[in-house]
Length: 211
Image: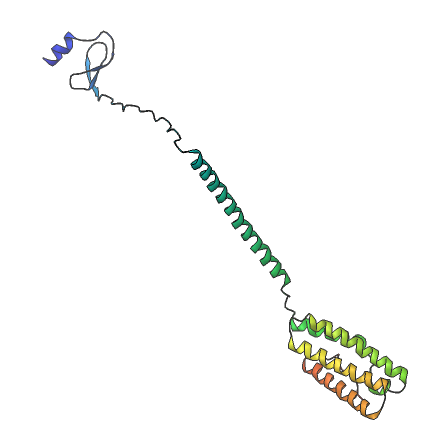
């Protein structure tokens, strides 16, 4: 009976045609086929219109001021971070690089090798000229050793050696200006102390012959 009713209302061309059930059935041009498909249901389209700006002029000004304040705050924070990084970089570059003990010993030995070569108490105490020559050499040595110690990053043995030879230079200078047995004895004791401090630290070139 269904096929009879379909036959009565057969369309004239192939295609999909609606049935009373709500589906679509395909007609191939001669007969109805078993191919069916559901009816497509389209959602109604609703256009969303832009909402009008109902803010007052004062509210608009406050909003603009707020945005400007946020931008300025961001810039201030970024500037602070950048400044902190710059300060940290400069501080790191100012920290003295630790100097190894072997390097300090080598620098002390080099300075003493230059100024103390051939230095003997007996050879330099004969005349005023030789005494002053010895004083000049000890003063130069004291200055060189002081410079090395100042770049030693607080090395205790470096300062001990520098101070010991500074005392020796002072004592020899007093003897050169006013030679007498007492001042000569003081100069020899200071030189002996400088010898001991140098040898204890392994600075073998910083030694003078006392006799």
